Image (cartoon, rainbow, N blue to C red; front, side, top):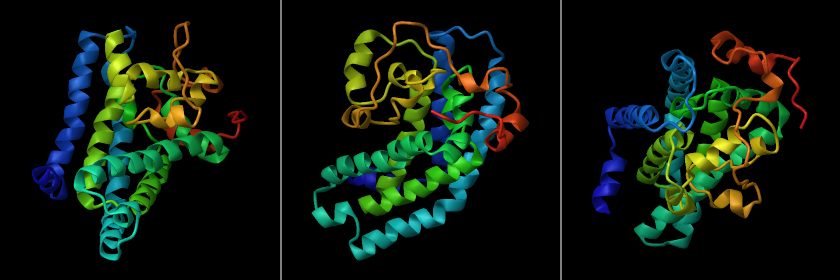
Length: 272
């Protein structure tokens, strides 16, 4: 445990970049070997716009990095947050901390963006992708990346999470988001067993179905517990899934200009 703490307390930026690139590479290769849906599309061209949004997400996170570090250090110095208050062993800090960070930093902000109309218009870019694969994971409008960065900081303060735990959470979040967006076919036993602990592609792809109520379900990123606890869990429908959003039919989901300006288009229906 000490080695784990030391590594993530001082994780080099190069290693974080390798985690991001390595995850995409692994799941990209798996998509080629065992695809769930055989998309008829130019995979590289499709990835291009998603890589652009990945790059803008990295920039936003970099801009918020100092505030993230300050928040974590302040909590440690002043004993603020759940973890300092309850004073549990390191292994319990790991479990409780990851749960709190995932609940606030992923599930809550994701749910909120689906419920507040002006925030939903920025999140629509993520749902506009009609060929969901591992590159879709980081397809977030720059303004949405700001929302997520703010809630990550809020989660750190509520949890009172030390920096090593924050870095571990972010590393897991990146890889598991790439995993649960991946267009890969997994054995039923895998979804029944691993799916009890982690969000799998079978669970998350329902969230990308083009019509509601499926779109407004399965918000989880790492843990599936929150959807089941708060009543937002939805089982896979019997009919084939179609990705995208019905209100965006006829629009080009690979046009960078259209996607960047989408939140400001007054002609797009946002009513639920």
